Image (tube, rainbow, N blue to C red; front, side, top):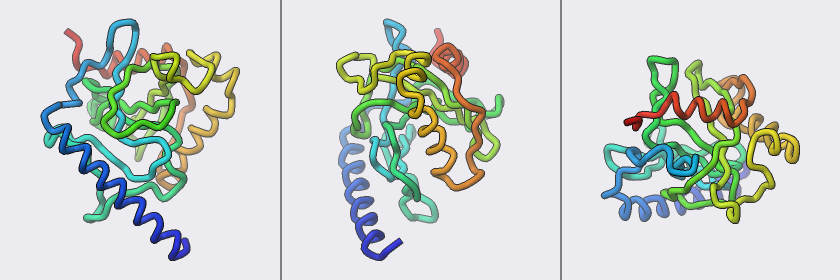
Length: 209
């Protein structure tokens, strides 16, 4: 990577970190992790951590109630690859249990839509699930579209129509996740449809009354 490119990346990273810090100040009183997982009308709640088109790894810290940049050895972590191709976050009140082979985190979710800022809460509809393992731990990712039809960017509302109308999207997303951490870190068992995605959500749900 050229010096000029590194300088540009560092500048972009700093600006994103500043933005997240500003957003976090206004979010301290709300606990995003305990929001309801499923809403009326067969819709799911998504909390956006990472905006589409960005490279800084942002995670929600439930103890501090803040969105914070992930860091390694005191350095802000950014993706050493292409930026995130879609909005990335989690479904609140869910858990991929370590006892069942999961990573112990809320269920990951990725949104096909316009780029949204960190901290956005949006109602979404599951259309697929990407079955992945990260260093041997289950790390499935639910693919969703906005529940509001006017906010959608693809003409698809289920796995069959997405696969038929945009067959390359699924292949490109799977390839990105297989490579963004380096070769061999992430493995994939392919895609499941919306029924499998819903089954995964219900399995991981922690707010069942």
